[in-house]
Length: 157
Image (cartoon, rainbow, N blue to C red):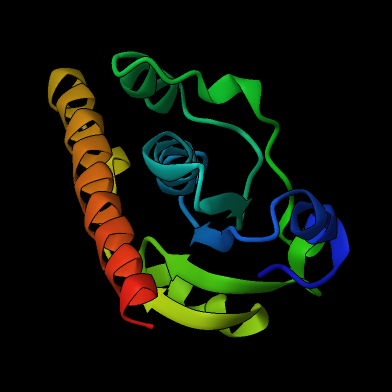
């Protein structure tokens, strides 16, 4: 559970939810998608928070890819990482290799290191759009598995 700081109010409002902090150094792409997708997949059991490491803008192709699955990521304003430095999370999940360096700065129960390709490295506009869609689907698939594993762990406990 979240224990302090900005997200402390979440504990009072949602005492049984597990808190998940997503970290990525890629501007407005991975963590934005992950937060929105986890909220959509299982907002009953998880409270997702995004801490973009280097910027507070959401990439336009992230917005487009998420709109295709009915999610408006522009509704939520992104927080800066310092807003979360004193919080304790149940899970801190990195979404790119460069964010692994930042995970030690956040307190948390379980640290999970995931890697997804950076769609911004693709130069061809059509292939880049496709890469954003692929990224969205890969993150969704990983989150479905994450939720399933956590549900089974809770039942076994």
